[in-house]
Length: 484
Ligand SMILES: Nc1ncnc2c1ncn2[C@@H]1O[C@H](COP(=O)(O)OP(=O)(O)OP(=O)(O)O)[C@@H](O)[C@H]1O
Image (tube, rainbow, N blue to C red; front, top):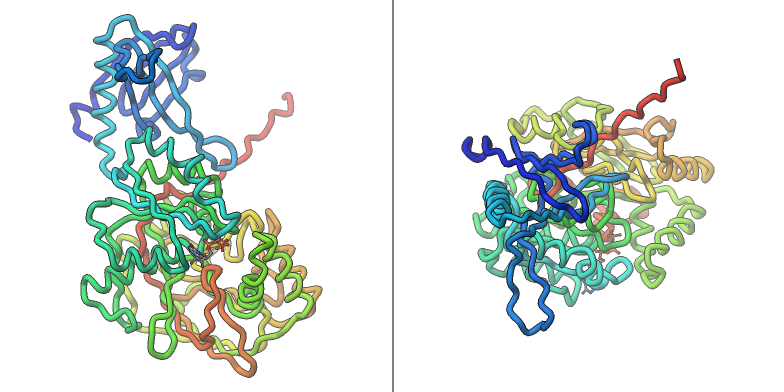
C-alpha cells in the first residue's frame, strides 16, 4: 500500500439509523462508536472489508433505471465470531453532504484496490453428487450473494460425472480466470488439484510418473466451499466447515501453501492426495461405504461398525524416509512459523535414512494434515502441519476389539489424541512405501478407494496455493477474578 494512501485520514459524523456516529479512517482501519470510550469502539481492519458501495435509490417502478443515493453508502465487512466462523455484516452511513459521502466511498475503494490478491474472475466447480447432494444450493445460499457484493465474477460449472472436473482443468484454457474453486467434499477437491498438477506437468513437459522429478506448482490458487460428507480438508484449513467462512476466505484472497503427497505404483503416478492415505480399516470402510451412499454421511458409521466388529488384521511392511525428527508436538495455526520457514528454504536432503516397520496392523495412515473434522475434532494426526513437507505416519497394531474401540473413542474426543496409546506408533516422514504380505486390503486416498496395494508416496512441499487465512489460534481462557 502506498504511503500516501496509508497516511490518509477521514473523520466524519454520520447518521446510522436513528443514531449519530463518529467514524474515523486512519492507518488502514475504520473505527466507529457512539460517543463511547475507545475500548467500546468498533475497529475494523481494512483487510476485513468486503466492499464499499453507494446505496441505490429504491424506485417504485422496477423498470426504471437504478440511481445511486448520493447521501448514503454501505460498508460490507466480515467479522470473526464463535467457533472460527466469519459472518457478513454491514455498516450503513448517511450524510447530508454528498461530497463527504463520495470522498469516503472513493478513498475506501481506492484502498481496497491494493488487495491485489483478491480474486476477480473465479471458475467454480459444483459437484451435485457428493454429501447431501445440495452443493448447488450451498453455492446459491451462501456464495452467490457474497461474491456479487465482493465484485467477483463467478463462472459456475456443474460436474456431470466422476473425474469431469479433473479432465476439465487438464484440457481447457484457464487464462480468463485468476482463480478456481469447488463446492464439494474431499473427493471433489482432489479431482481439482490432481487436474491442476497434471496440467502444469504437461505445460512444462515433466513426466509426472517419475517419482524423482520435482512436480511443478500450479499457478492458479484454489478455494474450497464445503459440500461433501466429511470435508476434512476445509476443516483443517479454516477450523470449521461453515460455508460462509469458506466463501469469505476466497474473497479475502489470502493464501497459504498446502503440501500434497504423490502416490505411485511400480510404474505410474496413481494420484495426489491432500488429507490422508490410509490402509486397512479405513481402506475397507471407504470401499464398503460406497455401496451405501444412499445413507448419506451415515454410511461411514454403518460400514465402520461392521469392519470394527470383524477386526481384521492386515499384514505388511512399511519403509519410510524420515529427517530423523519424531512428530513434534506443535500445532499448525494461522501464520504458522514452521510452515513459513519451510516455504522459504525447503531443500531436499540427499542423505536419506530409511526405517522399516513390519507386522500385522489394524490401520496404517499417512496423514498430510491433522484430518480433524466434526467427527474427530483433533484428527488422527493433531501435530501434522499444512505445509511443512512432512506426513505423519500413524501405525495402529492389530489388537483387541476393545482397544480398537479405545482408538475410535480417542479419535472422536475433543481433548485426547491417539498417539499415547500403547498399540499406536507415530513417525514423521518425507517419503514412504508399503508392501502387503498375505491377503491385501485397499487404500483410502482422500476418501476415494485406491485398489493398488503396493505403493510408494512422496510429499511435495507446498505444491498447492490455497485461499485460506489458516485456523485461528485458540485464545487462552481468561481467568475470572475470585473477588479479591
Ligand atoms: N456429477 C457427478 N456424478 C457422480 N460422481 C461425481 C460427480 N461429480 C464428482 N463426482 C465424484 O463424486 C465423488 C464424491 O464426491 P465428494 O468426495 O465431493 O463427496 P463425499 O464423498 O460425500 O464427501 P467427503 O469426501 O468429504 O466425505 C467423488 O469421487 C467425485 O469424483
